[in-house]
Length: 411
Image (tube, rainbow, N blue to C red; front, side, top):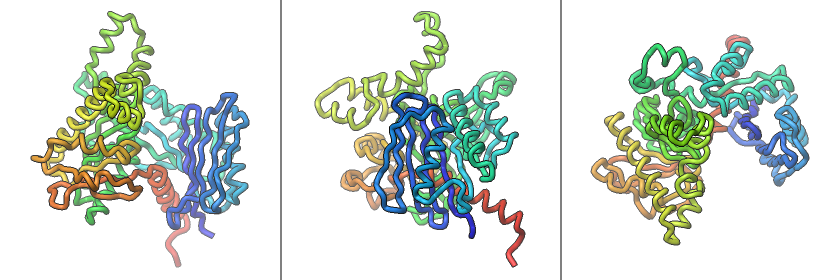
């Protein structure tokens, strides 16, 4: 029997998100989430999709990530999908920061884990949790290949003129200061799906991908390769986000230190957790912001206008970077569901061949679809992202290639 299942783990600082997929057809067998790890009121929700069972919930305390993964293993085992099953081909881990070195999914060994640890200073909020998920899975399943799929890897194709900051080169190199980009699994998946929607090969298509969730990023993808993206050294740069400021004059940091007496950590918290939409109007849920706008709330209206203005600037900039654009595509929670955001972001860009058909834009659907007028020069699309499937596909392709190499050519 050929092992065909991949468990995808996305470890946060106090959470563990997972999906089990069968790679013979890409179907999901089960999924779930462990929340509030280390707190008194932990919660595990598990849904066995393949068996048709309903969602199960556990609220007993989960002390740490090892206990969380053990609980996940118990739930999967109850459905007949135990982690000791010979059908489990690999465990794929989302790792946020892979630096410049990791350009592809990578089987995790001691050297790879050491490099992920070495990148913690440039991803202090993400890589430690990813490392915990990896080491926990290794301890519980030492015989199963563990694969790291990096958020940054899709963006390593950016040319130096797009990835370098204009600061002293020796200082930048000594401290790994450059633009790495994030949400790479989403940008890779969505750009390929957009090409398929247009009936073309990824190598023949130039796409602007707008990943708009609580975190938000844009990318310019030429012929299947990223040539620019909005996030930089960290996920703070770029678009206005739910709680992050996005682009800001760096001197604001110095000003707040000198005038407001704020420490580096306090400014870090301000820009990452108390800025963006929540800093502007107190809400980071676009649905609530739209409701407030409809009721005449001026703070919500201004927050929306600032959000859209920044988004429109990046669309225009990446149009210039690419030279020719075949499609602009919206994805992730806001991108897939907020029709007013899509309409406002492209309003006034008709001279660039960009327009939205209001009726098509208003349709709610979980399918990839075009929302531009039939005669539009540039396609506008909504393509649901699937980062877990992308991670599973990359993981399975890697371990399958390794297995084929060990076994030799078929007789």
